[in-house]
Length: 303
Image 1: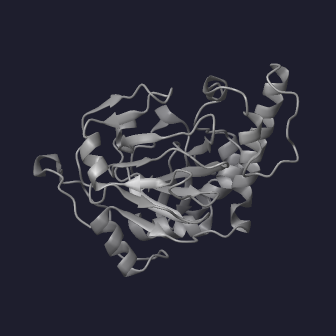
Image 2: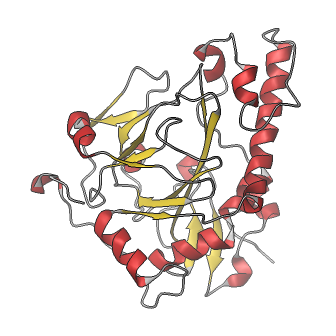
């Protein structure tokens, strides 16, 4: 893979490499991540290991169904529908505006998200890249792309455009689909080797109803796009400068995914975006937050 990213857009970004690889990634995987700016880890979690995520998402869908009934928008909560199609069926005949009242991304403080963020297989992979002192960043998102009503394209952007002044580097995303993600239902796309770029000029787009940030080099990004179709439970790792997007959902099911983010503990915890938590510490394991700590808004455990 290669990129024609202009040299004037490249910035000497500080790297954070652990002295010893104590995580789960191989030397070849680490080298690929550092060279290309992203890494696909197929089948990182099993179907059963995604149960906590599905629990949190089903809880949210229950809330949405209750609200739609209360508003007189629907009569049937579709409680018996499959996970993959229930949200589609709830919004049949409704508009994108009806959907966007609930937000295109969700960040509820539900135990299911904590258990996913603290999943050892995920944290082990992150440890390979930043060492064993790991903070779970407060900016995690559950994202449903709902076919037929809110197809959910996300334009080309850098995550760092949402927190350009935060003294956090690297912030690593683990993008994980909860159902198989492909080019039909809107998988992730990346522009390889852009992980050391400056925060590029961007604007707020006006066509998705959410005002996502979008880089001004959209056409160039389109030329270098690499699609990353992956199975449910796979992880795509990249930092907050890597330029990426996702395409609309043209299937008849929901394309569910969750963004998890991690950073070294000595970086800005970004409190203006919420409360993260200490997810692993080889030096101070007694401080690692429990689910009770996280639900109470405590970033660490205090004995």
